[in-house]
Length: 436
Image (cartoon, rainbow, N blue to C red; front, side, top):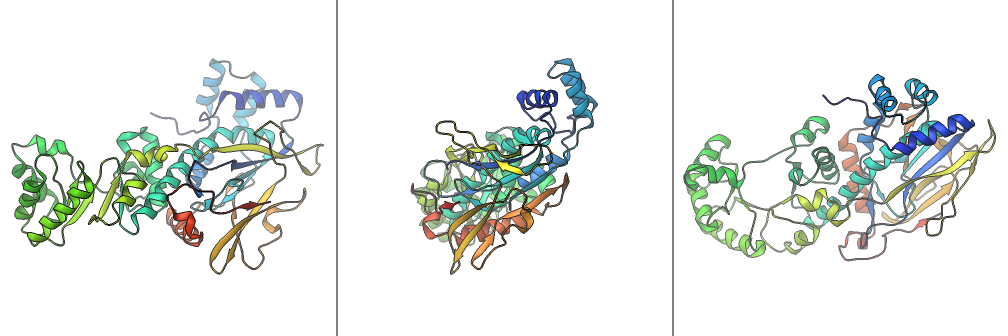
């Protein structure tokens, strides 16, 4: 049985930094950390915030119970003082972030964490592992939704990734507009609609295609989708239409030259008076092959491998950096930044707004909060500016949880307001400039 605690979903060095800070007296210094991307994957015009809801659930379960403490003690990861601290530790800090589903760009302050160093350092790995994966999948899936131009997309990539990543990927795909997933755990955990019918193995199990189709139609009714490329596609289409009495819901093509196959099958279905039967295509699709099928009579796309691997960009490149800290006990949070060549930091606690002109986003405005300024009242949005930052956790309590449907709606609205080049698949610069 898997322990429900998420506390060990972290890196060894988070705990050794904590141990050293406890020993030298800096663990209680109040700090601010920021999550941002220095750049986007090559050719991408925007990123997508995804995984926030999962992160809040995991944060709730981030507790060092007896089993976790015993594991750390057995392997002598940290000393007894640190183990005692972890055993009584609860996150008491604050978290702000872009609304899930929102688009982001290089330099966007996607997530901010404030609290003691002891609080903030423990969350780094968990935050980055969730957001880097989910944001990458969501960004790729969003491009696929754009390429599909209103045609439904089905997520079917569970067999092409880690079993837990499959659940997260299904959620991220649904968030940005996919219609459903094949993954049943995604339905149980996150309410993602699911669907599926049969694989080639089901056809091969039976003595012939007639027996297989008859069985499926009997079990799932005429509205089912028959997989027609196990043997001869045209023969399978004719057989499916015949056995369903012309009321077959859909046929799926998973191989061959998909444009040619789809056009031929559409002509064949129409000639058989099965004009209402839809065509589903699958087989290593990505946003580019989906776009290439835009003028082909395809009704639904099934996407697997490219989706769960971020379509060539399996991580969003997000980092978690200290941007402000107390210099003295009870003092204000003052900016700090590293000067590493090529990875220069930027100091200061940030908030952000989207500048919108006539319904079209024009820029992302990032402001730095004064050392003692409350984020919730910082500046306020002026006319033509849309606030991007939401309160997610306040004094250790989750306050920003929301249904997945809200994030799904937010994403649709965010993409719709971006300038037209943002929705192009060709390589180009980020769609918006982040102005600090």
